[in-house]
Length: 252
Image: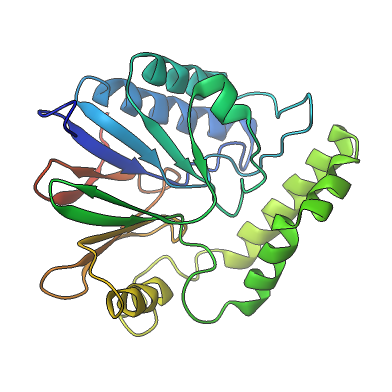
């Protein structure tokens, strides 16, 4: 934040653009773009913490069509010198180099640690962390496998994207609204993960997405877990003003 002493750092996640259909996705995309346009004059950096898209796969010379408003806005921000960071989520983990080359946005596949103004941040999408969920963790290893990604790439985009969109719909249907409320400290697996990490090293803030529920939870007197919610139902984000992090709701 030294280059922008009067500016803030913003965090948001889980847009799931493309779902459940073009019309509703476009409404959400316009909301995200309006938000980014609103903060551009006060943003030192912007972190998008996973699942921009409901599905994303980069073929050698083909990327999914659409999302031009958001992609154009991200390019405008980075061209203006505002760093934008992207952590892949479980729905768009098949990123390659499109964001880096076209948008000048670094792409991260694992959580990363940052420090600003003496505050330490642990940032990641949040999928596959904490206890349990062994089925997903196994599937994640398969999806991250280079051979599996190459084999998928041999499918014609029409078939590949059709299959991927079907699987994404199945995933959402399975999750449903069963976890649209706070499950309690003992049952929130990301809270368990944060506590395990705190036993090894101090972090002031854990910033995650994936959960789709806005959560601001005090892990102890000096550390907090922030879940960013989503831009499907809640339209929430977090902002660090150089002193503290606040979880807020975007109202146009």
